[in-house]
Length: 307
Image (cartoon, rainbow, N blue to C red; front, side, top):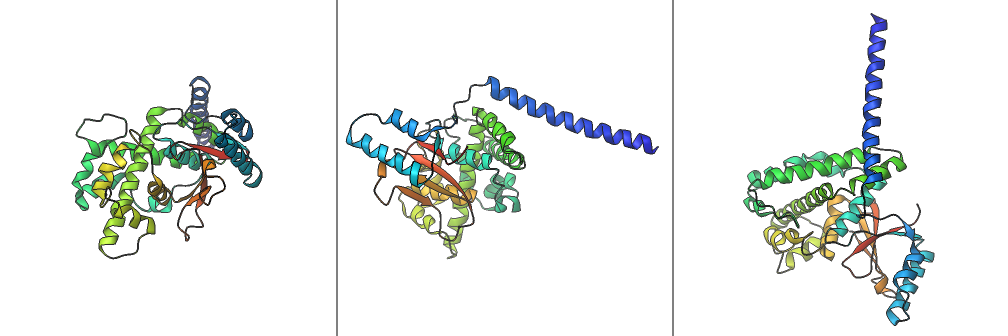
């Protein structure tokens, strides 16, 4: 009997190993045979600058100086170009979170995020969330809550799986495959958008109860286009990914939602206080950092200090 038990144990171990190996190979082959231009490979920062800003105009000279500053003083040696669509900020931030193996935020572990749509609809009376729009997708079905659940489930599962991988090379391969699948990408970005909306609703209720909220929420709620969560969704979030990206207040909200510090280099603002912008509150110093680089405050790329 003991011999049979040992044999069964080894069979189970072999099965688990082979299943993991098959899963790894399927993703590896997907990387090799699927064109992925969502997040491009690292290229030399100064080489990129020389190619993009070779003219002898005043703007080009300033941009070259800015890139020299990034290279020597901020130790940025490479750049990863990100597809320039209206999801680019979400793409660049989420890619860095996954590739660094940053774990799921504690608050998302503490609650069942998959039930957020129902919680907002039935417990908090936000029946208007059924007007949520999924970026560029022309979604016409009435099952908005079901689709939101699928998006949140996709985000959570991918985040938990990739952050559990300790080998940076394997984690990088999985990230390349994940961000080469447009359908999966868009589901994750829509999940992030909806979770951002949840944070806005929570902050609005705290404000109504005269409780403390981070200062950027006051900026958000004083705009004519986002006086409350409904107007924020209709006038801002619904069009993100389709007609617009994130603005500066949204960047604070994104970092707050995902519990990361978003640090943005802006070469076109060289020699000014706005050359580097940190989207975080002073008391959030223990959060992980993600870095972005933008030449126009519309499209964002990933600066890399080392490969």
